[in-house]
Image (cartoon, rainbow, N blue to C red; front, side, top):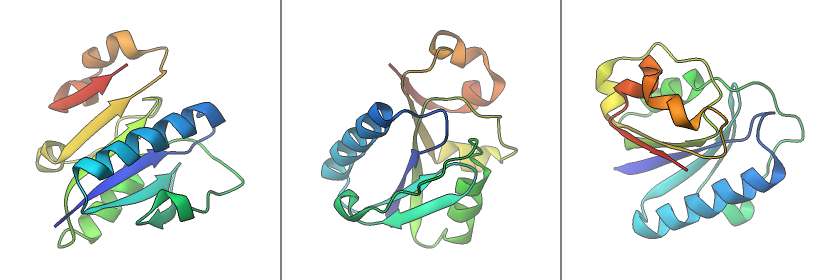
Length: 131
């Protein structure tokens, strides 16, 4: 089974944050070689096995992680867990606790970082890393 590494590429993410997210994703790939990358905003915009060949979209919309959980469920025979790299600026999705147990979230650069564990969705995620 593979790990799905999702990189937030929405309108709230700067070019510098995209580079940071891709650097984090590359380190994760070194630790978990059986990984696939996806870029997303409100939909998955790119799926790739290597970031060097990633074709990022020109336009970027609002963040909605629901598309990630839909993709994960649709491909549940392929993926064992989901790592989301984001700024944390999205509405909480309506997902099962079983899916949340398979989710790790890395949040960077968010002005809300200090209180994310008080947001009900983030409080349910067992593996939340902020910096």
